[in-house]
Image (cartoon, rainbow, N blue to C red):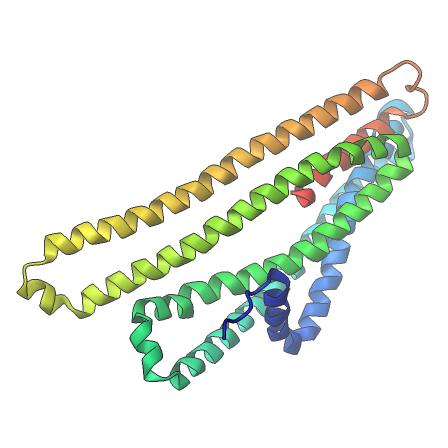
Length: 298
């Protein structure tokens, strides 16, 4: 009977099950993510009193307070960022350990016919490379889901507080960025699957040649094996270059779209009829929030 295809959500649910035994560290990391997400909004909000109070009104209290607040904000940001990174790495390495333990135990219980159908190199690649990649992707996905989503919500709420109509304008153009990012992400996943298969093929070929080196030497097959290895190795290189091209091309395109949005916002806010609605500090604070929003969107 043919098994139903795996879905991304189903795979993530199964992998998150491996993280449940470490829920205390997970809760601490999530709390640090929430606080870290708030620091981006705090940084954007600090622009308003810094410009309006320090440079325009010349408020002595603000002149003393803003530098201290800026340093304190980055100290707090660094601390929560460290707790997030350490906590998720702590969980991720234990998930990798547990996955490898379960996979190795499964290998021991598999029938002989399974090993006849699957080369040892591919199985070894699953135990080493694939487990590492999948577990790291899971912890990274959790971090992105929680920290970056909250960062976006906090920043959007602050942008609405500064100027609702400018925020609505940004949200109207935002789906173009989201669509582009989704396309690039799908391409990354597709190429990543091919790279995993290629690594398995590379490991399999190398393992067979190393174990069968006596046979290779006996039949003078060194040159033949070198040519075969070059083909497998070259395929892996091309796949990694496809990933590099996709990553390299997506960043400037996204930045160009963001620059167009920024130019439109600057033009609209400098119109004579709108200049009185937003102060200089408020405008720069809005721009800072919008630029900080780009990274979590991506």
